[in-house]
Image (cartoon, rainbow, N blue to C red):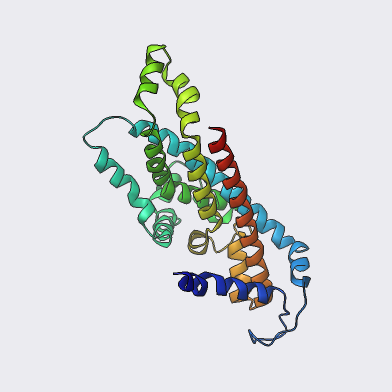
Length: 275
């Protein structure tokens, strides 16, 4: 297993780091000049990097906040005895198990100007459906698609946390006269905060890796309005053929993801110790 992991993950990562400290003056991926941190200095001095970082942060925060908030309230609604509970959960998980590229293609058909179902409804209300022509609306559509696909998954995961709350705690709060809002704030959220952090961490890492949705729906446009870091790195590496620079972007994104994951894990571990 360690050998498989080394070949599938570690070796490509090491090679990407190697490319990031070399020059792009050759098409060969082996015979290269060592330039140290020159490519990294180039990245941080590039306005496109800061734009891509801004897009990445906006997308991740938007998707994460809406998915956790909507998923939490959906989980509360599902946390009630029902003979249809298993069926409802299976239906809710359907979007999450679909390949992201399939969801993106479905969204592109629904949002296609003039002929898409959603565009038709929007235009019938007297509004413009040219969402892809405006930077803000294009980014909002990307967030909406991600929220639609993964909010049910967040809800099911949080539902497992809700069902782990001891029944006697809930009964005691009812005896004390606590209402639904009070129980949610004082009991439910504190008891599942570990689950909330874990689910948030998983979605954070996954949202950072967004690619198919951008590739299918906007291709980074209009302009650079939806050109997130990973998509920007893809275009630099494969389309512009600047392999060293593209590898550097990938290393920066990977390092940032590891840093965020480490910080989130420490927060989660600290909460467990305090609990």
